[in-house]
Length: 98
Image (cartoon, rainbow, N blue to C red; front, side):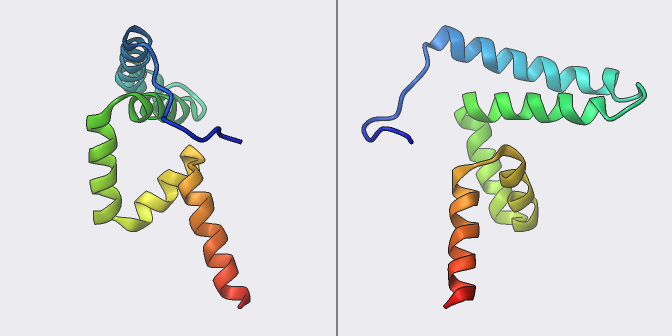
């Protein structure tokens, strides 16, 4: 489990490297997309994950899009395996049982 306390932050050089790698993967998606198989989907998902985890701007934009399109937000949360999505599903299950 996560330890209580202040959130852990990465060194800026590591964060910027991961952010750049994420943008690079997103940029490579159209190149990988036409190749046989679902490779482009996984490259895009990996790039989006890296960008969302390392960019405050991207997180804010993602939160705005989740409020505007809730179904998209739910699917994205499941794909990213976010703890908040698991908590919401658990609460919904507990509400059904009661």
